Image 1 (cartoon, rainbow over the protein chains, first blue to last red):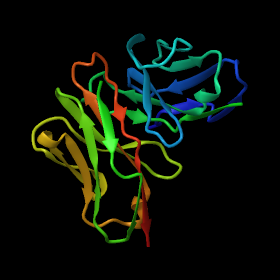
Image 2 (image 1 turned 90 degrees about the vertical axis):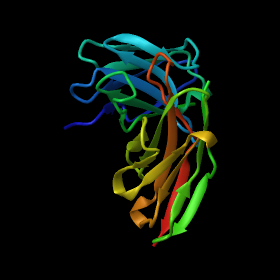
Image 3 (image 1 turned 135 degrees about the vertical axis):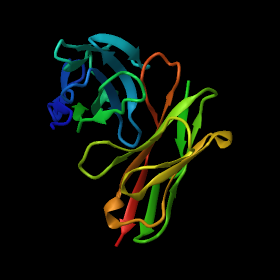
Length: 114
Length: 115
């Protein structure tokens, strides 16, 4: 079975630009979550989507937005990029939305903002 | 809001040594607890999890963790490490009643095992 796939793997953007990151969950998984991992830190929760609805949002500014499509894939958008947005962005999928359904992580998209 | 503290930033051990990685969380209610591992160049993988019941949880590759509610701790252990255990280990907590399934991670502990 294919795992969680994320694209692109690496991305370099300039301050002020906008970026879109993509995630395809494991087949049959209905929930997608996004996490930001800054160098030297653990992943930090950004969003959770389940059945195309936002179920949770972490402490991130409105520049961050996301959506989930009917096929359960997801996009994370970040507007007006700041240097501090440089990080590894992780997507995780799970079959359901509860904690009994473990998260499966992708390899991430490494975003560098210059 | 919950938080997770991992005591060690970097641990260096020789093969066959015993391992214990500390993890403490702060949250007054019911929690689910997890340990994830990230091998070099690979994605985060679930090592083990605690939801309820027996506080001693066994995971993959010989790892185990003990939930001590009174100490708000969930330490990871392995009796004898191998070179292949070299990785970064993350403790995480999910608080019940948060309304969504969101994990709060610690900063991680990098484990280096010397052959």
